[in-house]
Image (spheres, rainbow, N blue to C red):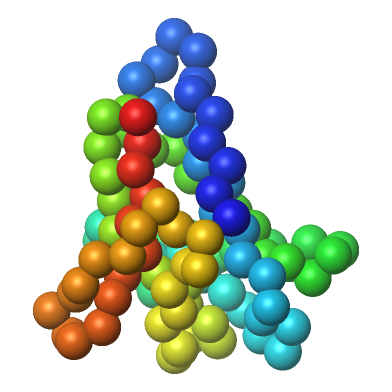
Length: 99
């Protein structure tokens, strides 16, 4: 799930990235073009309800591709992304659109 909240007096939006259903995961990270696709740059935290989440500040009037990295090896698309876009590896990336 994506939750977007504009930051007052800023040209950025606070975006909460959340994913459920990764109960067996030991670690989940967020990788995307906003962090140079670095698989360990943005670690997520497991909440008490079992979902994983992290908050990132992103530029307004932009769109970003991303994926979740599970246990350092499985790259997972977000079922709740704003859209999916083809990537150069024959799969898809998730897309978040910031108004």
